[in-house]
Length: 401
Image (cartoon, rainbow, N blue to C red; front, side, top):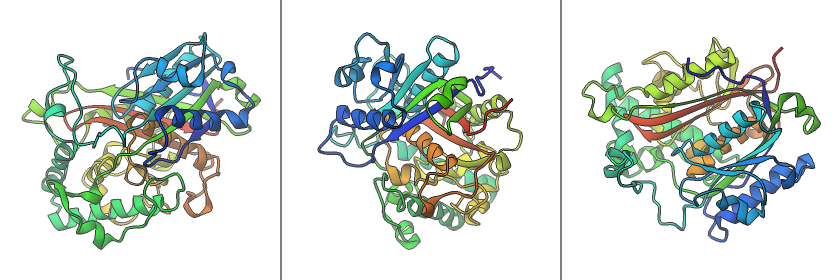
C-alpha cells in the first residue's frame, strides 16, 4: 500500500454537471460557468468563499488562468491539472488532499473540456516532443490499442468470437439503455442489439457502437472538512478512498504483457479498497461508474476491479449482473458510451452519478436498488493497454466512527 488514505476526513457537499454533447454555441468558459453555478447554488456559498480551486482540463487551456479569467477569481490559488483521461478525477484528488491536510477549509474541483470544435476525433493525440510519452500512444489509435484486448481475452478463457461479440454488444446495449433515461447524456436513444452488432468496424473487431464518442461538458464539486459537512448539506458524500496508480509504460515492449488485464487498475483498486476497508467489493459497493471507453474495456475492468472472477466476467455481463437491476449496477448514467468523453470532465461526471444515486436523487427510471450503507465507485483509465494511469475513488453517505 502506497498511501495511508484520508478515509472520512473530507466530504463533498455539492456537485453540478452540465449536459454533455455537441455544444457548438458554448465555449469552455460557458461550460465551466454553468457547472460552477449549479454547484454553488444549493449551498449559499459564493466563489469568494472557496479557499482554493483545482481545474482539470486536457486540451481546453493551460494554467489556472483558464478558470480564473472567466470566473473572475482574484487573489486565490487556482491550479490546472492534467493526467489524460483521469484529469477530472485528478482535480478532485488534489482538492480532497488539500482540505484533508488542513491547508484549506473549502475547495472546489472543476473538470471541463471543449473538444467538438477543436477537430479532435479521439483517435490519436498530439505528443509533446521529448516528454517520454510519444511512443505507442502517438503512433496508433486508441481503438487499435484497445482492440487487442478482445482476442487475448477470448483465447485465454476459451471464449468463441461469436460469444465475445454477443457480450460486447450487450455492454453497449446496457449503457445506451441507461443513457436513454439520462437528460444529461449526449446519446439518448436505446439501440437494438442487432444494430450494435452490425455496426461498421473501426479497429479489429470493435465496431462503431463498441467505441465511446467525443463530446463537450463540465462538472464540479465542493469539498470541505468532514466535520463541517452538515453546515452545507444534509446528506454529504464522505470520501472513503482516492487511489491513483501510474504504470511504467513498458507493456507494449514486454513480450509477456497480458492484454486481459490492466495492472494499474488492479493496483489502484487494491489500494482504494484498503483505504476504505472494503473486503468484499461485490457486496459493499452499490454502484460503479467505470471507464467504458470501449466495450471490451468495461469487460476487462469487471475482473480488474474484483466484480467478477477471472475469466467469468463475460458470463456475468451476459447474465445481466451489471445491469441497472443487476447485483452491481455499472454505469447507471450511461457511461462514456452514452455521454461521450470530454476528457477533463469525465471523472467528475462519474462522481456526479454517485452523488445522485447514493443520495437517492436519480430519476426513478434509472435509480439503482437501495444503496443505503453501501459505497459508490468511480474508475478512470488514461492511456491504453501497456501504458496507462488508473484512478479509483470510493464515496459513501455514512461517516465511519
